[in-house]
Amino acid sequence: MLEVLIVIVVAYLIGSLSFAVILSRVSGLPDPRSYGSGNPGATNVLRSGRKSVAALTLLGDALKGAVAVLLAQWATQVWGLPSYAPALAGLAAFVGHLWPVFFGFKGGKGVATALGLLMALNPWLGFACAASWLLVFLLTRVSSLSALVAAGLAPVYVWWLSGQGVDTLAILGVALLIFWRHKANIGRLLRGEEAGFKRS
Image (cartoon, rainbow, N blue to C red; front, side):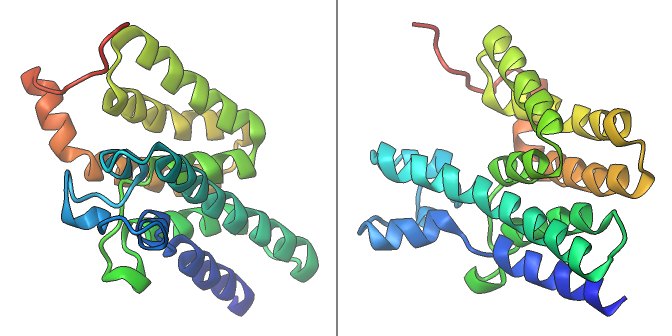
């Protein structure tokens, strides 16, 4: 259906807005792809020492995932699209964050964008994933492990809350991409070398 394709393309373009790069340029900071991990995300922007810019990056990355889904939900009502269109839009926005067309297809790991799209799809889904992340982080103080556990549980939560196969497959795609983007972190976790946050 042409309307579904339009929704997916628009969602991808929204996801392609790399707030780490945009806000760094506006704030006179170096391109986050040029230092630290080279990852254009909030965590790497934080290495610049500008906590406010990192916080805005986190918010922007989450909002673009939410906006893409909310627009798709609106379009679904107006155009009578299939009920799974918002989930596909969320996946498209997530892919846009990972491979942004406006920034040389070099994007971030997508955790904030994933949380934003999950919250928009179903607030209970978003809260369940956020709670899973927080629980693992409180126990381990390792952010990457927390993100991986939350991502792994996300498709389970979707199936439990909606029971819709296409929605579950779309979020499974998001989860698998998160695991793929965290492959270096997974290697360090398996070797016991992944750094965590010290307890105060």
